[in-house]
Length: 392
Length: 135
Image 1 (cartoon, rainbow over the protein chains, first blue to last red):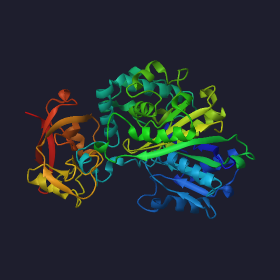
Image 2 (image 1 turned 180 degrees about the vertical axis):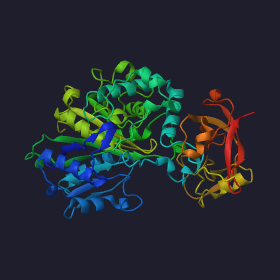
Image 3 (image 1 turned 90 degrees about the vertical axis):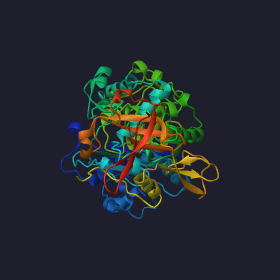
Image 4 (image 1 turned 120 degrees about the horizontal axis):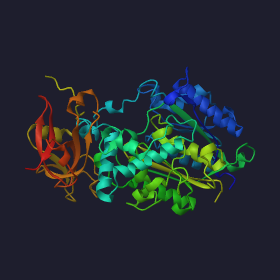
């Protein structure tokens, strides 16, 4: 088992007020700094990195079409032998970690760096609504469907129709997530927020209001993976990658097979659970991409943490908030901590901190096994990771 | 008056839909082997593979599968129209289309509502099939 894949370092880029990058930062320097911090946490340097995974919206059109190449140049990596630039939206980094795990296990790579950076807030660059009405978007974009929020709103509407979830259900998720953010000094929004605050906010695309939607911030992060054997000489106890899975279904929301079920997450997590030899009842912490509150509700159900239609009971009364029965998104999530556009990497960063016991005021006692799930596009792609302090 | 909203990037595989719309016909695709209907994605019509695909004219009636009322516009061109409804309509033949549901009674819009297509000629070159409550 010495080549078992493990995570040995993580970092998120520091930001200032409301999630702006520090002065002088570039989208590349954010990634370099996060990478450096994650490597030094483990006691590694950039010289040890022989594998690189990256995805993002930066540098496009242009050199961003080849992000692994540009970052190899910028970081000064020497002949990396493993490269991954797969972009499946915000799920990308969770997918990267799964693939990196297999590359490490098979000996294709020894130490893989997964990085992400974005200056979408300070550069006012989030213009997804301006994307061309091509391919399956020939219908929704000309109709004025605001993307991505309008697509998630349609799923929320369908979920409410089929399973009886309500705006209060969704508001519970936003309020619980904010309560976690209040315990995270790095979170962009930490002021208390109640269910009534969420319900009273202006409507964006029904049934989703302002606080059902993720933030728009800058940010970045890095995760370092290597073998269990190499980790013996490193500073951090290893976090074991026990299982992973990924899938995709549709690009336009019109073609989501069942708009009330996140089947892509069911598919990816089923494989991850099987590989890990774990079942949902053995999960202590869920880090779920919360692009919108509805994403969390649908992901909880699809991962089997509760049954389809049971999510509204699962989150009721602050069950996922600090002190609740089941911790979800303890960093404050994309809803209140940060959301630089493709958030998936932060699910891994926080899960590791919780598993290491390094989560400060928000530390959950007894976290041994965590599930991370990234969702990309308009509920389009999914990637799952099961992490544990124990191997096997 | 120029049309300033986003227009579809019509390609060889969607051209029959948009040409049909200009002629007042709602066109969808049908698999010659399984008889299943779809539009552009085969995902919702399991078993539709191969190339025996024909374009047929749909009746233009269906139900609201889901919808959202947009209070924040998808860009400046939609600003004057808020709140407006974007719906995913499931046609009686089985294909799904996302388009606008035009109605004076937004409060009454609901999943399962019967709707019918009409053809909105938004410019000389472009006619967009839209929906309204079935009369």
